[in-house]
Structure formats: structure tokens, C-alpha cells
Image (cartoon, rainbow, N blue to C red):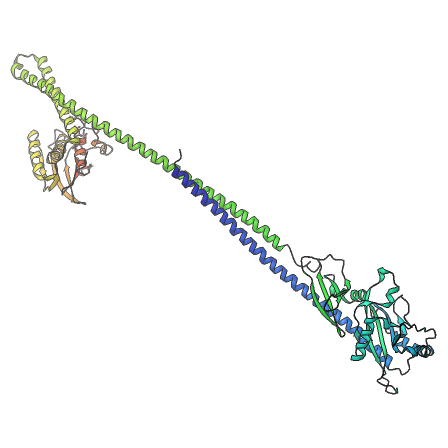
Length: 597
Ligand code: ADP
């Protein structure tokens, strides 16, 4: 079962993963939004600039066109003013310069003269005589009339000759301004009188160009005197479409509004076939026209934006979203793999911990069992000692008292009995030593190794002649009885494992090693130990190959190993370069508490 700490760690991991994903996603989205916004701004700027440029072009075209009309009107007025007594034929000749191709939207050109109410008939007669026999002046109202005495029609709406246009406030206002300023003037927007007779669908709002006519012939008696006005009626829609068609280039729709303040009147609108682009606000500007100002509203059509890729921001969004999604997916994969790997590490660690705990448990139990076994062996050995002593005692007694009376077979049996009992004694002694080496209370006192080695050498040399050389051994710290046992075992083995036909040469020396320790070496010229057996000879009941002909229990080196371990030392065996073996063990020079067991 998962522990609470594991669950908490897992939750924390998941929270971190989600946070990482959210963070990556947010950064991706923010980057995308920023790019899209920047592109959209750039795009809007370009559109704005394009529309402003186009508006300026259109405004210039309109101003230029109005100027052209005004110039034409000024020229015509000058031509008319140069005749001292203008005949109809002369007016017609002057007016031939004007046609609808030159001045698009023009409806007709008229010479208007101011006529007092009392002079209407006289004026009519005069102009009839000057070449317009059919002139029929139609004055409206009282006061001064403004009569069209000459007229050139420029469209199919008929002549305005004889008409009194003093009823048209816009035309009158323009005429007055033109006279006052002595310049060509454009009137306010209104429906031309001529258009009143047209069907509604053909009616347009328009305006008139008014040029004041002053007598200009140097020979004329009235030179410089005001004679009247030359008025050109113009339909706004027709004028505008001709004036702006080229400049607008289908990229913009144009609306002309008259009146700077208040409610401007939409005079004319021009719209190409292209659909309008409502995403860009229209631009309002003013256009100066002869003595007046018109308002101009220019709106973009989709053609204006044709060269500009308006989907860039959308593409940026798309690419950004795809990249963000990829990034999030990648991060998700990395995070998931990492989490999975971490989980596996956690699981493996938990399994390892479990294994270690199990192993420690098994080791503990083994140690307990071993201690029990060793204790048991010790008890058994101890209990076997007295019966064995009795067996040996009786065997010795038999040997001493009745040897002479025994026949050969009985003597052989007795010898075998004594030898078996002796072997058993050695085994029991070794077992007891092995058991006590583990549990015996240990002293921690200075031990003169040299003295110990000399004693052992003396005792051993008494059993079998051997050359035993004891070097300058130090005084170390430990248990004298146990250390004596170590030296006894090693020196005993050194003599024992030298073949009987060879005199044993044993050397016991010591040298200081690191950590305040001494390494004591016991070398011999014996049979040696094969390399593969050198590590295992220190295990209990283990004997090396080649030692079958030598008596032994396989316990001596195990006892040595235990004793050295309890002195915090190490033990080992190497081959003697001169033949035989070199056993070594380390002991502390100074006091150190032994391993509690
Ligand atoms: P054993 O009672 O057999 O001598 P030990 O534990 O003292 O038991 O030694 C274990 C084995 O190590 C021996 O049986 C022998 O094979 C080998 N051995 C020990 N000392 C020597 C030595 N000095 N030379 C050669 N072999 C040795």
C-alpha cells in the first residue's frame, strides 16, 4: 500500500507537472497574442496610410477639376465681356468651346443679366434684336430679376433662355459673391431649376459655377462695367464620377457633402463596383473649391487592401496555437516520462529498502543461530570432555598395566583406541576454543608479543625440532590469552604443514602499518596453500587441497580469524616467495575497546 508521504509526493509531482504545462501554454499563448497584435497593428497602419494617401489624391483631383471649370468659366466670361454688344451668334461661337466632354456634369451655360421689373419688355426686345427672336422672358415676382438672356444647352433638358433664376436662393447668393469678389464662385448645393422637370430617378443635386462678366473691350464706352453673370449649371453626381473615377481607382468610395458646419447635405456619391471594407473607418476631409469648401468622405473598398495580406494576424494565431500545442504536448511528454522515471526510482528504492530490511533480518537470525550453534557445540564439547578423559584414562591404564598380556591384535585395537580418543580430544579442544573465541570476555591490556612468541616457539620446538626465529616484536594492546592462541595456531600450523622430511623454518616478525597498528607475520617453508584456497581456509572446518596427509580439524584458522576480528584487525595469507606460506594479522598498538558481541 502506498504511504501518505508517497501520495503527497505524487500529488506534488502532478501539481508541478500541471503547473509546468499551464506555464508553457500561457507563455505560448502570450507570445502568439503579441505577434498577432503586432502584425494586426502593422496591418492597420498600412491600411490607414493607404486610405490617407488615396484620400489626398481624390481631394486633389476634385480641387483640380473645380479649378479647371473655374478657369474655363473665367475665360468664357472674359470672352463675353470683350464684346461691346454681344450678339447671340457671338455667344454661340464662344460657347462652342464648352461641351459635356470637356466639362462633365455641365447642364447648360447661360448669360444672366440683372433686369429691373420695369425693364423686362425692353430687355426682351433688345436681346431679340441681338439674335434671339424667340426669346420669351418669364420674370417671377417683383423687384430685380435675373434673366437668362442667352443659353447654350449641354444636355437633353431643354433651354433655360428667358428663365428668371432670381427665385433660386443658392444661385443668387453665388452671383452676389461673384460680383462682390469679381471672381468665379461655386454655389451651395441645390436642385437645379432645370432638373425640376426631370423624372425623379434622373434628378440630381447640383451647383452652379458663376463668373461675373465685366465689359473688357478697351474701345467700349462702358469698359469695366458689370454686365451680368455667366452661369454653368453642373450636376453633382456626374461631375463627381468624372472627377474622381480615375483618382479613386476603384480603391475608395467617395461622398461629397456640402456645408462645413451644421448638417452637411450629401451632394453626390461615387461608388465603384468593389464592395466596401467596413473594417476601416472612412476618412472625412475638406476640399477647397472656388470660394467655398466641400466635405469629402472617403471610404475604403476591398480593392484598396488587395495588396495587403489581412490574414497575417490570423495566420500568426494559427501558427502560434499549433506551436503552443506542440510545445505543451512536448512538455507533457517530458514531464510524464520524468514522473514515470521518478515513480520507477521510488518503487525500486522501496523494493531495495524492503530487500535490505529482509536481508538484515536474515543476517540477524543467522547470527543468532550461529551463536546458538557455537554455544551448543561448546556445551557438547564440554560435556564430552569427562567421558573422554575416562576413556583415555582407562586406555592408558590398560596400556601400562596389561600391555604385556595382550596379543598382537589386542595391542593394535588398544593403539587405535588411544589414537581415536586423542583425535577426539583435539577436536573437542578446538571446538571449545572456537566457541570461547566468540564469547569469552576479553581483556584489553598491553601484550608483549615477543614474549608470547618465544614461549610458543619453545613449546612447539619441544614437540618437533624446528628452526623458529622470533624477530623484534612490539608490545600491543589486547587479550594476552587470545593473542597467544593466535600465535600458537599459526606457529603450530607452520611446523605441522612442513613435510616430515624437511626441517621447519619459521620466522615471526612485525612491522608497523597505518592507523597505529602492527602487522605480525608468520612465515614457513611448508607445503604452501593453492591460491584459490587462500581466502576460504579461514572458514570453519575448511581445509586446503594438499593437506589431506596432515591431521587437523579445520578449526584453527577460524579461531584465529575470530580473535583477530575481535581486536579490530585483519588476517590473511600470501605465498612465501621462498616457498611455503606467510600468514599475517594486524593488532592495535594502543588500547581500543573490542567489538562487543
Ligand atoms: P587444521 O586443523 O586443518 O590445521 P586450520 O584451520 O588450522 O585447520 O587450517 C585450515 C587449513 O589451512 C589446513 O587444513 C591447511 O590445509 C591449511 N593450512 C593452515 N596452515 C598452513 C600452513 N602453514 N601451510 C600450509 N597449509 C596450511
